Image (cartoon, rainbow, N blue to C red; front, side, top):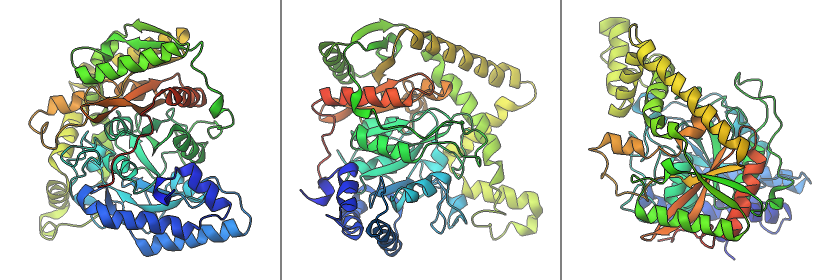
Length: 487
């Protein structure tokens, strides 16, 4: 079997057993990136010399007898996660050329576990978007169909795994930005409970919503990276006092006796018929395996998109205030003559793209005097109701199941003139961020030859149980680990 056909878990085992060298593993993946990424556009930065040096360092640790759960496994990193000595641009002109002086905590954890940072991946600018089309640098294309979007905002991280450029990647999820591109690219994407993975070194979008999480080809691979990148971090004030995710019982999950809730609001008219058909087939397989499935109503789901697009922009308007053209990124040449205000105006005018500017303005408006109570406060009240409704469901059911995305991968450019349609792509994923719940997407099947993700959502801190259930469901789905063609 070729190196590129091996899972992350298989690669780590072979490197640990010295059946493969870490250098051979990265060379195979670097070669695939060189051969095909010009057409897909998953990466913004790849430094082969640095990658090979990391591989040699990992090999030395393996040769010295150190046990490493990610031994020699290449990991692609979304370009809004800080990497010391490697550019971190958030796919924005305002951070062009910015090289952080430190690693994010998750990067330290990846390296400690023996993983190798193979490159930084493309995204929607500052993670604001659902198609990776708002990147200031280039488009990213879906490996299943190069005319279609990989989703977003972590589209580059999803495409990198789906294309075989890296067996694992990290993304960030504010309203679905891991799970939605995982769905469109036919891979696994996991958002842990809010606070289980450190956000130190993540460039913030919506601080009460953001969570770093892994992509992979299998639930086992994703769980392995999640275990390496979770646990308490004193550098992150929102980090929970919880241990890393425990993999010891990952294979013990069973669907028999499982109680599954399927919200009617996730399978309405906005969901494509092909997507509904795949989800219904997944439900039938779960029932055949012994699970109990009930249709339920969670009314607040219908309010999720409008609520999210008040809270997230409000938090973004505050977080992006630090980008002024003075401390980070290029400074406008002609702004100094206009004084401090002129410099900041010029930096933001030319540095931020249209989507980022729009969200900053919406968020600033929602927080302004006279509108705070009408918009932001009301949105937070709806968020509390949504959390309570889901918690009520979790008292009676083990998981909530539904489509990850209401549609399969759409053609690049098709939704650019309909911003509401683009935002509605997050309708099924937003609730997990609102409540801080763990959620995972895995490939449930295909509609019109394109992947359809099935999402599982569990109660807060039930990450291990959710991963066990996802692994059990994965065993029942014949197409769950089917890979995109390498053309």
